[in-house]
Image 1 (cartoon, rainbow, N blue to C red):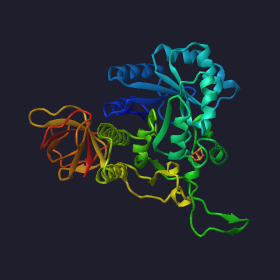
Image 2 (cartoon, helix red, strand yellow):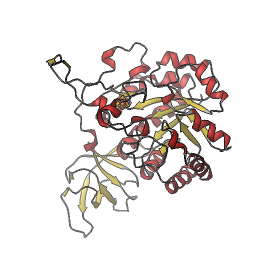
Image 3 (tube, rainbow, N blue to C red):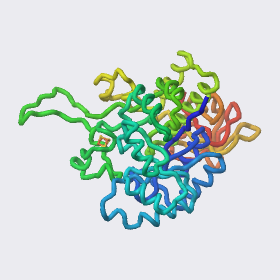
Image 4 (spheres, rainbow, N blue to C red):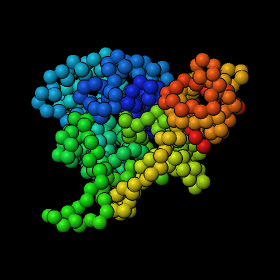
Amino acid sequence: MKKPELLAPAGDLNRLKVAILYGADAVFIGGKFFSLRAKANNFSLKDIEEGVLFAHQHHAKVYVTVNIVPNEDDFKNLSSYLLALDRVNVDAIIVSSISVLLQAKKLHCRFEVHVSTQHSILNSYAIQFFKNLGADRVVLARELNILEIQQIKKNTTLPLEVFIHGGMCSSFSGRCTLSNAMANRDANKGGCAHSCRWPYFLYHEETPISDKEISFASTDLMGINYLPQLIDAQIDSFKIEGRMKSIYYIANVVKIYRQFIDFYCQFKKIDKKQMNYYKKELLKIESRSLSPVFLNPHLKNEGILIHQNTNNANQSFIGMILEDSDSYHCAFVEQRNHFTLDTKVEIIQPNQPNQSVKILQMWDLNDNPLTIARHPQQIIKIQFSKPVKKDAIMRRK
Ligand code: SF4
């Protein structure tokens, strides 16, 4: 059975490395120029080069978003930027403008060109159009259901990428000026203020017509129910959304989908108990409501609109382990959220089942014993009840 690529987001070098260590086959990142997600700590060219080297050493790929919707002035330095990306050996760029695609081809760049979901590609005729222009892959619109995706795959030979997890737009991906109007921030230049997620009261002239706050936002996508059908349909790449997301989120989501894909491709089945386990793990990480959104062919409105979820998922992330533990099971840890000697801890690490450990003792860098780790990003030495590995995550149990 053909194994699909697992493609993860990375907002900076640390997250790129974590995504790859936790099982991503490829990561997508944004450069400082021509890229959406302006606040995602986008990569300098030097960072991109380092990220590509790290990825290639781990047999993974790096795709760079060059996906603004450009105005006339935006083209000034485009050619030199594309040539620079080619020089540092990126594997692909992701574009949402035909002009950027054509420019890359004209310059004979060696990287692939992938057409962004912002093109709202809903059919094989559109795919053929981009294939004729030289595109190497298209990212399908997030508004397709599983039956439509299966049908499109049968009618094209161009590799297809499908979103399986992460945030959604409440309009057709990115075709929205709500943020421009409400916050003077251009969503198609990376400045979306997520205005669709704000709480609103509805009025007709002076008369209120809603008795409670409403939001236009969609739930986030969790497509795991449809993964077996997507794998069987031989979709080439499964994309996780979220270049603004934390290390904790990326490590966990990548690990869960990695395990799912590997298991399903090996045994060609997944039982209900396992499916429930993966879903439960994904729900632990997310602080927003999740659903299969448009992948569900029987979608009703209530499956899309957000129901606020108050789960404080990110506070479960209490530490990042900085080194392999020594013979006494001691290791340095970077604190991420408040915890104490009595906190029940679960260790999450690449390629291993999660495991419970106890904190036996901890000290600050001056060897003073600690009972509480209360300072954000403080480096602490901890003696655990079991060995732990570098890059593992400590989660509150
Ligand atoms: S405001 Fe909402 S719908 Fe509009 S671009 Fe931003 S996330 Fe998408």
